[in-house]
Image (cartoon, rainbow, N blue to C red; front, side, top):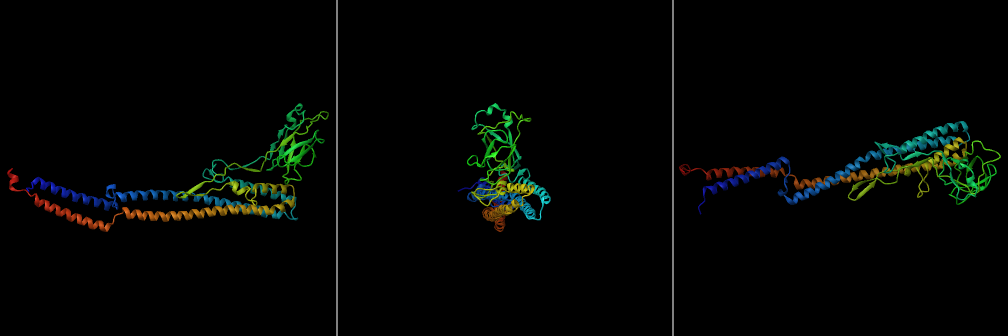
Length: 413
C-alpha cells in the first residue's frame, strides 16, 4: 500500500500534538498540585472530591457557629459570677442585721445598700452583647426586666354590688393598692356603710377563701390572716376632696376592689431556646433567660423569686423586723445556689461545645486527607512522567523530521 507524503505529515503532526498536549497537562498538574483539573480527567474522583468539599463546607460552618457563641457563653459566666457576688454581699449584710446588736439606724443604712444590690441585679439581667440583651430569650431587642410601680389603681367590680351604687360618683370610690405581691387579691365590702362602719373581707386566691371582717378605713391592710403570708399590700381610698359629714360616702355590700398581681420586677422576654447546630441533625441550646436565673419555677420547689425576696428583706429592714430577716437567710442561700446551678449549666454547655468543636476538627482533618488522596498530585510520579513525555516528544520530533525530509522531487514540482 502506498503511503503518501500528506499522510506522513498528518501522522507526524498528530503524534507531535498528542505529546505536546500530554506535556501541557502534566505541566498544569504540577503547577496546580492537583491531578484533576477537569471532570474528564477522572469523573469518579471529581464527583467524590465535590462531595468531600460539601462536607468540609458544612464542618467549617459548624465550627464558625460554635466559635461565634463562645463570646456569649463567656459573658453569661461573667454575669452569673457577678450575680453570685451580689447575693453573697446581701447575705453578709443581712446576717449583720438579724442579730440583737443592730438597731434601726444601721438597718436603714443597710436598706440603702440593699437598694444598690437590687439595682445591680437589674443591670445584670438587662446585660447586652452588642445590641442584643442576652437574658431575654429570643426577644433580644428589648430589656427583659422592668421595675413595676408600687402603686396601681384598684379595679372596681360592681357585678355583685347591691342596688344604689350608681347614685354615687364612681370617682368617690376610687382606691389604689400600694405594695408588691403576686397574689390576686380581692377586697369585698361585707357590710354596707361609710368609712369606719362598713366592713370588708380579703381573699388572696382570687375569691376562693376569705378573711374575717374588718372595719373599712381610708387605708386598709390587704391580708387574709388564715391564708398566704402578708405582703404588706394596702388599699388606700382617695374619696371626695371635701366629704360632707351629713352625706358620707356609702360603700354598698358586695362591691369589690380587685388587685392585679404586681411583683417588684416583671420579666418581659420569652422562654424560647436558641440553639447552635453542632452536627448533622444535632443542636445544643446556648441561651439562658432571666426567668430561669432570677425567678421561681413550679417544677422546682427550691427555686426562689430573687427580687421578691430582696424586696421583702428591704421592707423588713425599713420596718425594723429582725425576725423576718432571720427567716429569709435560708432563702438567700437557696437563691445563691439557684444562680450557681445556672452557672454550672452554662459551664456544661461550654464544655459540650468545645468537645463538639474538637470532634469537628478531627472530622475536618480526615476529610481533607481523603480529599488530598483523591485529587492531589504525586510529584515524584509526575516528574518521572514528565521526563518520559519529554523523551517521547523529542523522539517524535526526530522521527518526524527524518520521515518528511524534502527530496529533489519536491523542488521539481
